[in-house]
Length: 321
Image (cartoon, rainbow, N blue to C red; front, side):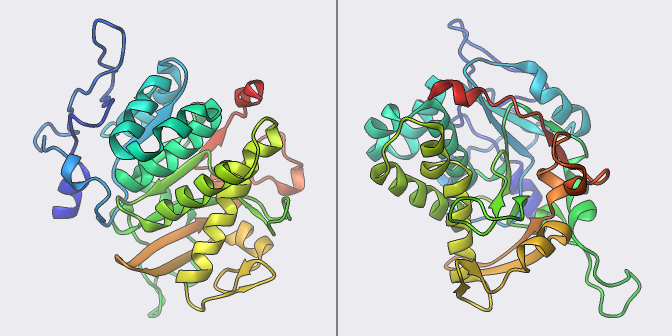
């Protein structure tokens, strides 16, 4: 389909394109290889970055201080057509200089983990695809994620049953981390793994909210990071956007009317439509077991099945504050 072809477009302007390996120049810096999954559609994406295109493309974004081949192996072994884009600290600054030159100076002063947070939101907006921290392991092929995670509230043979959307038909996938209050939020979303269509205004809103927090809140301690750019800020921004663009609109006690109660949402997940300036965005809030699972969580909160990814919780970012 045209959507699939467009979603597989790649570009010399994206800083790192990896198809089964990383291409480096003489300075050992990763460079664009312009590798297309099927080598047939090598069209630059530069001019269309940030313009809306339905569907979550098979592109994975990762960032770390140095190139680490091991983290992407689980992703590539299960998803042979996946294109991996890896960014070090220098490439993050290159990306910001190209896409948001107005914020380079302040961005460069942020903590590395805050830079990585802001980058993931902008990468989802400008390019679309999947973002994952380097300590996240892929457990199921990406194309099967909707079928595994989206609730089937009606039997498939029911006349009222709707087909489960494919990745090419979805605009976002966001997972539940906690169904209990976290700081001032009634629950918390995962931001170590994200999925989005290109030009999705949800992720532009998340970035703008976090950028505002960077300008308001002082930096320097771990709690500040999670409120400035991390999961607390991310969750608040997502809840606000859902409240303003889902139906019914509005909030009750800081929680969107359109969402299931937090505990039910964490158990079941929920499909969602958001009505925005680019049209209707179709997405899913994933149940806890999809993205949020961790073996150290208390047994009553764990699920032994249907994990799409597993976060290994290295927590190395805490060494930065």
